[in-house]
Length: 196
Image (cartoon, helix red, strand yellow):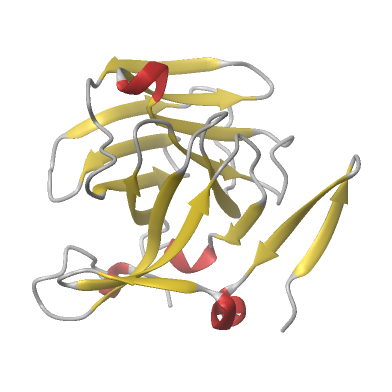
């Protein structure tokens, strides 16, 4: 299947599904193999289908790992554009001092916490992103932790997330590893909870 090309006000974005994996670049970790994307701007250029990251309980769950000096950004959106209502997660913003979750459109509300040095340009740092559409809860956990680093409860109408994407900030180069597949039983990725 060919990736779809969506034109938005003179800019193109790419929508990738599971069938698009053949062009993907992969990273090998000790217990997982993960898809890799190199981020170089604050524009969300590639959107991925979120469907396979929903578990049998209807909760979205995805492990991501970032490597970079600051600004690992994740967007969870209803459609394959960054203009739609969305949740924006920023890790290591403000020169690697703060992290936040924001709902954008119709209202900008946020959860912001101090997270000094949460990002590293020397090693990948892992985060578990969860979203419960029934309760409107967006949470970010450090990889392997049961305590949320960030939590946001959407008191408006919770969004139906169908796509996600990654970006960074101006003049940054950040690598993101995601869509991780366990290689052994020591992996922190639990694919048994996924719907597919």
